[in-house]
Image 1 (cartoon, rainbow, N blue to C red):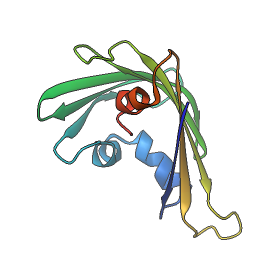
Image 2 (image 1 turned 120 degrees about the vertical axis):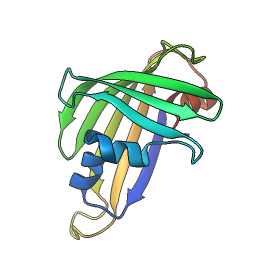
Image 3 (image 1 turned 180 degrees about the vertical axis):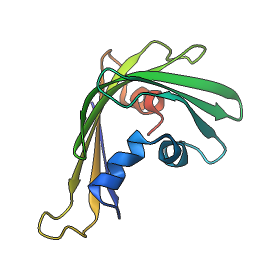
Image 4 (image 1 turned 90 degrees about the horizontal axis):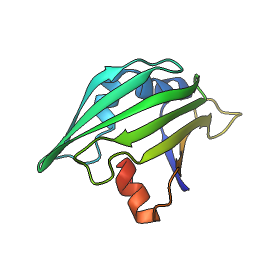
Length: 135
């Protein structure tokens, strides 16, 4: 399991929306400034699916997934699977996003975005980061 924790100067609702709205997702999810992301399909509901297309200088890499849990603004769980010709094509990852206030007393405090990645097949930690693109 790979556990990433980030702080954002944003409300939990806004952080959650950044996963739910295509325009916001395209703005922040790209792993490299030389790459771009296009949300080809996004059906943001439990059982709904998505398809994202990352364009890197050397390749186009689509990823697909299904939403498993949606509990705004605190919890989101979805699968993440690269498509061919990516070297990790077919390797399904379950991503859990947990959003909470950094300081429950001060609602204006920085928010914490906690992403837990659980790889469903045995993969090294270095490969986990590459598979997800959030290393």
